[in-house]
Length: 325
Image (cartoon, rainbow, N blue to C red; front, side, top):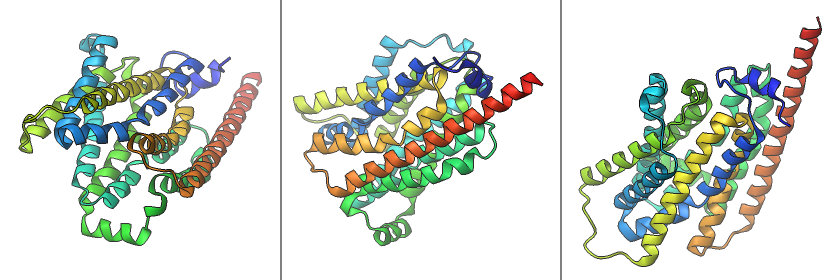
């Protein structure tokens, strides 16, 4: 059973106890997002970068409207709709632009690594917002180990620190956008649950991203395809839209009903799943650095879990002692 007293005390603005089921659903988003990179690449090959992204988010938006129709907008807190919507749309736009502005394949990998700083930032933000003394410092060792693991799992043999620094100096904009996106998403995931009043705006925000992607496509001079795409490309686009949208739906549910600290720690697996699924979809072999990176991600995550549970137990004992007095 979930310890409702501890979870409710940590998230007093949620208005309900946190459930294991909500946490599990939230963690399933990580599995679904793992297919995003490989499927998005296949969609881009079929339709082009900007049109492919617009079609992917349109498919996902339609799916969410059919399966997770949002409550009337007047029921949502205005601050949540405004700030949450801006952060959600800005994150998606900045990430898509950062990858598009990368001038080489190596830069694309490096930009994606910068984006994958969001799990580390989210772990630190949720630790800071937990209200328990010393949790940020306790989360830091595991965060560092897991981040190094992510770099090895995603970068593999191609990761060269000196080359990356030269790429940042010669073309800084995509790296700045990727870091801004990582920061924005970590802030979004950490603070919007308490702003939402229980309202899940995922479907609304996702549809706004779809509109934004179409605007970007036409502003950039793109048009409709002149020849019919392959059946495989169409299927990949549909599958990508469904996996991304379902992932956001699960994550939104998890933020409102699950344990945010557990979701934050579990998010380290996102780039690992993404790299593994991409190699399968795109026919690339996994090397030794990937498996070393996986081991480091698991080690860092377990370290964070251990410190988090120890901190929660200490807070619970202090709370019980205060009630007895």
